[in-house]
Image (tube, rainbow, N blue to C red; front, side):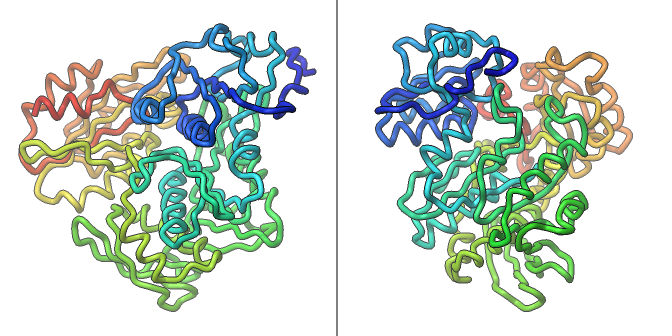
Length: 479
């Protein structure tokens, strides 16, 4: 029993037959993926959430999972055999209250993944502040294309599968390991629940300001993850990240580094951009390992590919198998995803919201659209992106854009006024850097102003981690 009166003896898989599993907070990408996987295995799945938006809401509907809008105690009628509790809810949530009153067994999402998806498999865990969704997706596709029949649970929808999950017969599962907290009854990072066979660490930066105090707090979480590794495990790290270097001076496991340094175990060699594809060489410990081509855009994605190549080599895949997978990888929805082209104007959707992700995404797409302007439309929506801690970083993140449209955050009420980013100052700073930047109070004013100024050849890159009021489709209808 905790200080809050929570009976943690119920935090377990119930005895007997499990038929009905309810997901509280089902529209999170990982929660939704697990719900679909379990439905495919024959369980009756119900779910609820406060806010559902594409692509996960559409994905759940396509899989036949009905999402109840809002959290209510009545959502647990009829009584489920097990409740999977997402970290979106806290103690006092009406469903949580009813769950505890009924004495229902419950699990966090990572506990449920271990019990129902990862048990008995080699866990290939991809972690990091940036790039983990793309890296995990590419690694899963490499294994599938090589005939490994892997399982995976990833926080994005892979276009090669039109799915964010897969239950395979192979002995490997690819898991996107998130540093965010697990549940209201377990405030540790999710990735601590996945003891890895191979781990990839792409980057460490400050993010998730709602749960981490500062960068040192973030590093502490990743240090805890690294300590879970054993001497026979392999940790693949990006060697240009000083925060990773700080945590891996005396690793408890085998270590391989990827990047652009002469000392990189896996080095990115000469690269040629030939739209819509990128060709690149990979050197292993100074010697040519292979030549590859991919539809992925940007150096950051080539580094993600390096990490996958290192992990795949450890597992025994051939250069030819890796090359085939890289060539046929179709990417992830909401990562540099072209939503449509109308009158020569391309509208692209991307999940970027952290300043580093914004900067690298803009740099990545710029060479592929040389004949028009790059128009960035940005909605600060995460708890971190709405905070002033990133005020200066955002001012330097949009240099590759010709025009920037900033939407006033719609969820400012979630951040104390003294901690909020100042959108007016951001726009002024961007203008001083020679960028045509404008501030908009809402999505509708962007749609009223932007279309008339666009011309053939332009790329409109829309960046948000939310649905952004379906601005993508609405813009395409107006241009």
